[in-house]
Image (cartoon, rainbow, N blue to C red; front, side, top):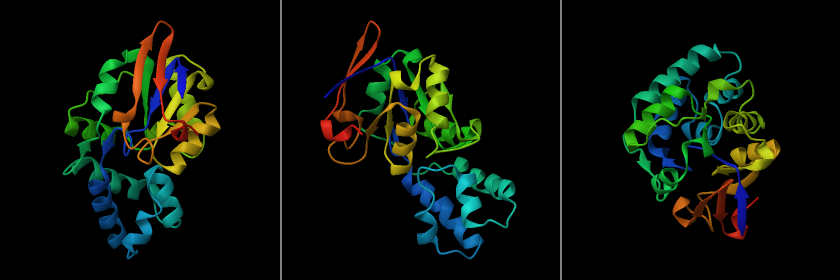
Length: 208
């Protein structure tokens, strides 16, 4: 399928980079701190803001204090974080004003992981602390499109989790699923920069 867009909106973890080992270590430590079963906690966190996961898992704790704790764990542990195939090539091809990072992670975590894989801080980004409502609400991708100067309907969003894909769809942008068949990573994406934006060749089944 050929898609044309004025702007591209990229999730970070699981879409551009693989941070799963570091994420699992941090949240396993968090779970044990609160006598929770780590495997259960790990089913509740991916694709979401940490503050939202904490409020759901532990509604009676000081969520802001616990969020500061998990932010420290995640931003100081980048062992095993790696760039996913195709990510660098796609980002280097795109003009800086045609793409925005849209992550549930906070800015300190995102910047630590970008540095770990050798990617620069993007010109445009939406971090977890930038919105009142995180994914699956549409707010992050609406804001990402706004920061590029486009309507969400003029953009394509790339996500690896069902939570993230729901956020893209709710925003009005076209959603593309990454990290699963048929688009396992951005190496399977064909990108052409055209006069008024970007043209993409994407497997039909990846478009949601």
